[in-house]
Each structure stands twice: as C-alpha cells, then as structure tokens.
Length: 297
Image (spheres, rainbow, N blue to C red):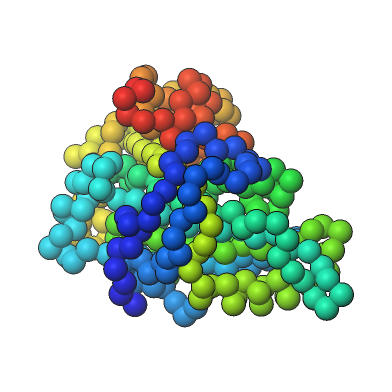
C-alpha cells in the first residue's frame, strides 16, 4: 500500500520533557488527519496482543530504497536519514452494564527516532520501544504497557525488511480499569479499538525528536570485517578499545553501543541499555537525554 508522506504536514507541540502520566498538553487542537505513511504496509491488517488489562493493535509500514539508492541511504546522517517513527495513541476504558466505554481523554504521541548511519532501524527497535516507558506511558500502567509493546513487535519483526531505512509504526492501545478486568471485557475493548483504527486521530499531539544509540565494534578493524551473506560489506562502525560496561561491569566483548551525543563516548552493552531506557531516557553516566538537541553537546 502506498500513501503520501502526510506526517510532515501535521502540526505538533514538540516537548522533550514529557513525563510518564502527563496530562493534556496546552495548545490548539490538531486537525483530524488520516495517517497513511509512505512505504509498504506489512500486512495483513494490524497485529493485536494482550498484556493484563491492556490490549494493543500495531500497523507497520517500511520504506526500502531501490538497490541503486542503498549506498546513499546507508551514508545518510541524522537529519533526514534512517529513522523510526512511532504514532502511539492510548485510550482508557471502564466497564458499563452493557460492555465497555471510553473514559477520560485519549492521549496521542508522535515520536521520531533518528537511527545512526552505522545502525539499521530493525536492529534499533529494541532501544526505541524500551524508551517509550519513561517518555509516554502512564505510570499507573507502565508495567503492563512495557510487556505489551514487545509482544506487538515480535509479531511484526519477522516481516520487516532488514534493508528498510524508515519504519512507520502506528499503535492503538486500550487500557481497561484494573477493577473492571475480565477476559470478555478485554475482547470488547479490542473491538472498540478495531473500529477506531479507521478514524482520523483527533485531539492534541505531543511530538518528540530523539536519537538512538550507535552500535560499535570492540577491537575489530573494519578491514577485517566479513562480508554479508549477500556480498555487501556491513556498514562502517566505530572501533573502540575493550573496557567494562558501566551498568553490569562485565567486559565489553559484543553487542556494544555508544550513547548518542555524549561529550566523551559512554559505551554500554546493548542489552543493558534496553533495561536502562525502560527507567529513563538519560545516559546512566552523564544524564544526557536522547531528546537533547545537538547544540547542547
């Protein structure tokens, strides 16, 4: 499915300091927009998963440049380069005598993650979804939503092309009051969400621009790197000396990444960053935010 790049036309309130459980953002309401991302939708239909009293539906679109354009795409910088765009809407529900109903306001979030040239959007997904917890999840349901997102991703990841340069992910999530939870009511929430998928997104948008960690190699010169299975060389990555991860204190041997924009390179295990990002979007050492603009470096 092809669509116009309508995202850039959406007026946004950019706020990098949005905390979990934040209330409505001030500003004029955004016009209703049907989101039809560029690229190819990876179907059929939206993926659905459950976690406790939450249910989510995820649609994914991927942009894969023609073979002749792949070298240029791999060399793109942070601005206008590879990225993961997440459109995330969550709606609260409560039980009624006849089923369920929407209660309170619907929260809408627009997050654009810049993927470094040395990485791919597919391998950077784990850091993007981990950082959603402190950025946009309501604190009262953070644990359920943290369990929900990887379930949605796992049902879609196998169909995402490895050479995709842009990923567009549209997530609709329903949160039922804990005291109202029953499996039957959760199915009713999912049916309401399914009806909402075809509707334009109303209300307020909170937009965030963030940068993701950069994968690096330890004691590995690029000239010695093996070729990929398709005969292409992997993207050039920074070489660092062996040291210990500041989070787990184990020797850095593989799965290593650098926090973006730190004055001195702060290097961690990629898996350790997944855990750190679930708690905060700040570097564990210098507290630099993923959302910090370049001029703050």
